[in-house]
Image (cartoon, rainbow, N blue to C red; front, side, top):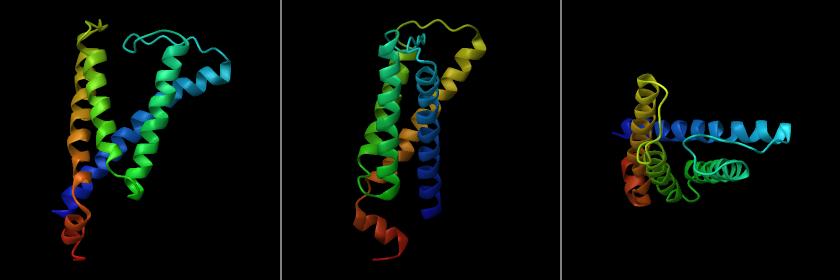
Length: 139
């Protein structure tokens, strides 16, 4: 059971770590070129607003990830995972975002299902410390 919980947490950490790095990518490119006029079809706003949404989201996500991995404050990470899942559904499915092809829609669904899996996996972090120690055989 410990191995399953570890694999679930690892999946959640990897998913959101890669997602945060993917959000930082356009921000780094925009900063390097001094052109902050970002436009992504699924992120609300244009220009500097999109840049700030991506940058601050990535920073908050990485902070919550590091805090969860180190055990300093593990309760922030599941909240972050839930916010990401809700925003993905809100931005990609609800407003009528137009997909270029059925293949794009399929990959978007995979992304959202991955976020759902990462959120459910992150719920492992909500166990009490006493219960975690008991599972590890330290109690």
